[in-house]
Length: 279
Image (cartoon, rainbow, N blue to C red):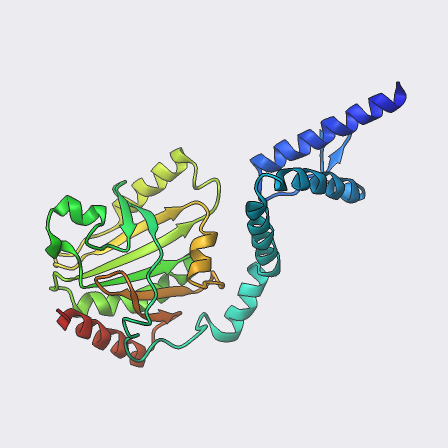
């Protein structure tokens, strides 16, 4: 009877741990009796319980388990301190911007991204002939020849984004074939909750000022997990800004990083002009 009670207690502890981990995937919990609390002495028991659960689940979805293990390995090997160390070394300038356009045959497609504008509307990038934005406007001419997409993962990179977007906005303010999008990624679970997200968008809608120009700066927010989006673009450091110039087919024809230099601004503007002239 004592042995049976011990088995039942261990089973309840394992179930509690798995339930808590499913609700909090970013945290690690350790079992001690029926209560959940961090305890280093329980690490071997947790590993054995988790391994047996993974082995059982692996029978039905081996690929999903392998992808999740690869993701955990990436996130454990790459964290905030690694980003900060790199940022101190190069100030967010992880690489120089392109000097010329990337050939269309060699350019990769910008991955699909759904973001929320400050007015609550959903923005789907890249915008192409079959996108919802074009269908809404009801004309193939609504497809922009050029789209400058600026990605920011942390608040400190906003000044870097402005160093690119402001000259772009000033140079092509009267162009109907150009678009400017600034997307900020929000991955904190609290800010992703519906009530908080609604308040955040409401505050941002009041703070965003529009200019009396044809080209408008459209600011959007992407809430939730963005690991696989970042992986497809090979984005590692979250403390810097990323700039992508897309053509009318949604291909990345030019890209920049960090804070813009005068030479890089000149390259961006000249490459944009070339794409605008392309029929």
